[in-house]
Image (tube, rainbow, N blue to C red; front, side):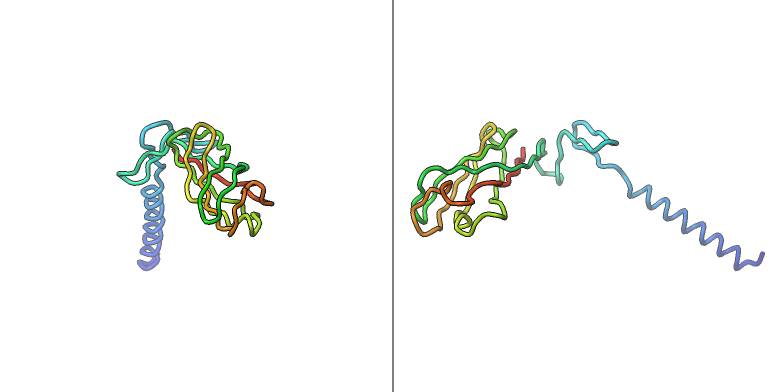
Length: 151
């Protein structure tokens, strides 16, 4: 066997070993910040922290609810509605957004804030419809409102 062929096999073996070593070095499982880790049927972390100074997340949950706002809100002012957010607790961060199927008139209510309580979230709404109105009486308002809970 000539030297060129020997060096070719040695080079190919070196590349294969390098690729395998690279895979082992960079293919490490996620290390949880405390808590339990389950692999196999899924990944279960009892808390997750992003970054060295981030706050650990212990719950991330999403769902839909019917946003109910049964009292009149004066034009260009704010009022509140409620949304059942099962599993939420006081102090949780809850983000809410109206469904993409919301009618044009209903879309003129802007969500400007939320406050979580046990299994419910108060939603502050800004009325930009141009008239005093009861949001829940507006066709298409609040059904299939999406929410995400973070703890």
